[in-house]
Image (cartoon, rainbow, N blue to C red; front, side, top):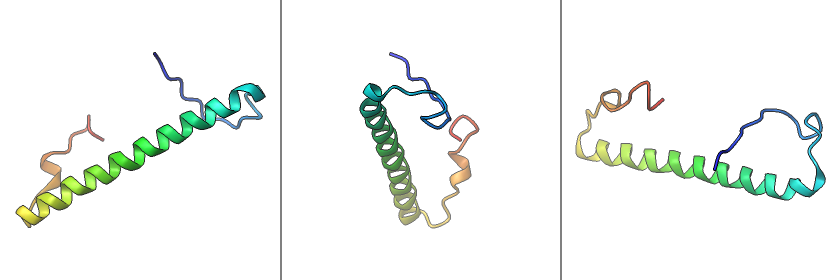
Length: 66
């Protein structure tokens, strides 16, 4: 399966009404995934700070991660 990302308003792409419900489902999934990913990253970072207060996050970040 592939997911196509389109940055546009629904009106400008002439989205058909019968597909709007599925579009909203996909948007909800993408939003929830993003929120959980950032929350998990924050959890990892805060945990590492408790272990090592001089934890340098730049050591684990890479351009591929960003």
